[in-house]
Length: 373
Image 1 (cartoon, rainbow, N blue to C red):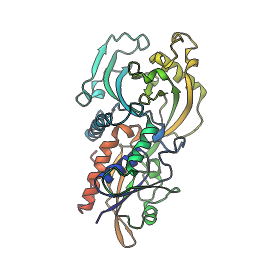
Image 2: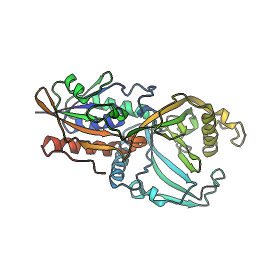
Image 3: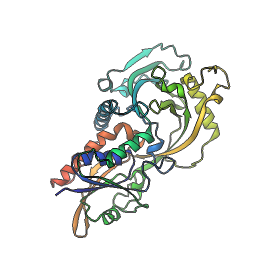
Image 4: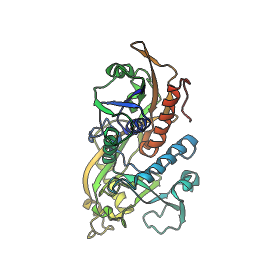
């Protein structure tokens, strides 16, 4: 008999895992307070992401494996998706603080990483090296909605899936009671895993970030589209096109263990825009001189964002719980998948593959297995 898996949470980890589980033949229902079309909810991290693949899994083999799997899947998806949703483009990372090849471990994954000395960028004069490679950017809200569409569509293998909006759940048992034939629960609740009774994870913490979403039609051109970042003594500046949609995420800030205030700081917005102009003059109309002190004022701002990323001490938890629930006299398994922080998109298919392995392990009655971290 087909097993019924209930996924709690509809962020990129929850939806990707749900889709891959359906493809494995499971009956899937997703329960979530926020769904992929809720693009302005500040309680929902996935729609706010810059959403690129720029791995920082420089020490842990499991994290590298997840990111590598996802890069390969993005390469396949690029043939299917239009360039305004997912596309490859040049990446340049200016490193002010250190010459650190370990951070750019992924040359074999992405076709090579080039280290450029004396790169000639006058803006990044402090940066001793530039690292260049080819990778992917996504329009996060559109991509997440596409994923949900595939999950719910008729063209995928496996039984039809459902996506149901629910109010906040305080336990996974509530989810199992809402779907009476539940066999297995996937806990993809993000920061909610702090409060869900079956996880109550005190290692979870928020990372508050301020970004600026802008309209830059020149980025729609293949010749001018590129992703650029600079790591400086005072933090990071980055320009992440949302594929070639013309929308671009500029950042940013990184405040660990903070979730408030949820209102943007105008001074931070100004700093982000000024830095972005210097890194990527193509954000401006062609008739604006990027060296002008007021050039940043000509960037067309769509929205200033405050997003809260769900991070966890020790890294993401991807594990089969050792204590299944008993619901209506039936044994219901639990798989946890949360706490990925800012790496949700670039690790999504790798984590989904682990979730599918754990689901098979549970179905075969082999007990619990910890995440491979």
